[in-house]
Image (cartoon, rainbow, N blue to C red):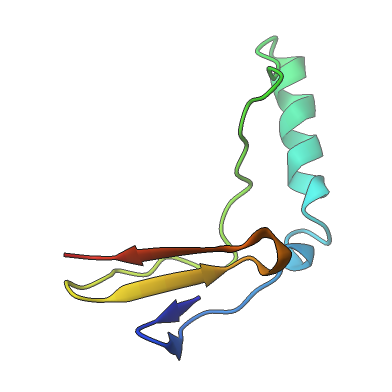
Length: 76
């Protein structure tokens, strides 16, 4: 993740509990155990690998997800 072109945080999904599927499978099992379950097409986020940042007015952040593209946000 960059802010105004400067690298602020770096991480990969593989660093999340050994593999990103670990927290996802835990969530699916826990929701099943409690009777809530998961629904087809539901979007799941297993958290952040970059930590929390507090953007300031005028800053532009870019999160690069490699082959999945990037997301840009400018704070007004």
